[in-house]
Length: 132
Image (cartoon, rainbow, N blue to C red):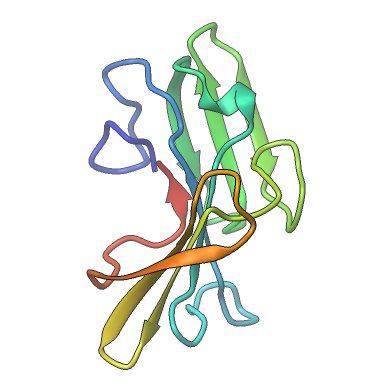
């Protein structure tokens, strides 16, 4: 889902950048959320963090980890976000969210830290995996 549109099917009106990519943990069928509805939040690598993107969307009907990014210069990248280090996102998440009982929690790291040292209660999720 792009950051300037009401849905990921339509390009935004202005050039934008990707702030983060959310990966949703799922059951084996890839369409059912995991127990706890776990989401991991990753920062994009440098080429995707620039303000040069006109469209970004997950191609969920083909593969929940496949996405397309259109750039201001007219080029397009279609990729799949693989586990661990890859060319699209940093190797480790900067935040993780999960549901426990009737509460939703977010764990975060300080910049440059390897330890999740912040925990706060957040609203229950409305949107799952995407590009924002």
